[in-house]
Length: 114
Length: 110
Image (cartoon, rainbow over all chains, first blue to last red; front, side, top):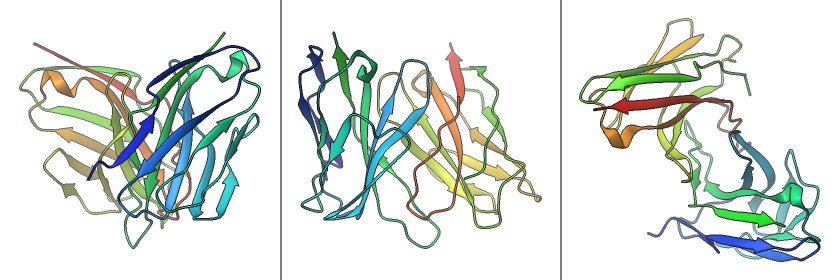
């Protein structure tokens, strides 16, 4: 299993540009999450999904959109990029069950908005 | 999810046991204690979790006090590759987000 994969690894955007961060998992997990991590800080939840076709906002959803058309994929869309969106973005997946809800994280996408 | 308190940093000599403490005095009865670590610039990595009994796996041991208000993660023989930020997280296993605090920055020294 590849686990959780993310592309691209790095990206530089100009203010006002848009892009999609890709995330895929091959563990057949129902739940998927997008977090962002600013320098020296912990992770904050942007959006999450409990299954195909179902998404919901996390702590910091403004400026982002998501979709979940398949179990495997959970892309994150940035519209009109702003310098405040400079961060490292992590995708994660899990299947909550009795006694466990381990989230597995991807390697991250480092985004800089100039 | 309940809040946790961890020391901001710790040092450990290579080959020695690293004992990382965590306070979670407001933990609820249905909440588990999870430990993750984040090696520089990588995604967080799951280490271990438990409810009230001590747990051990190939990576670490988790000791939870009887009143469940605190816990200790033990890396039995720390190596340089264990240098990372370690996060103690209280979580109810309901598919909610993980709440990451400041964590403990563990530096393993030769």
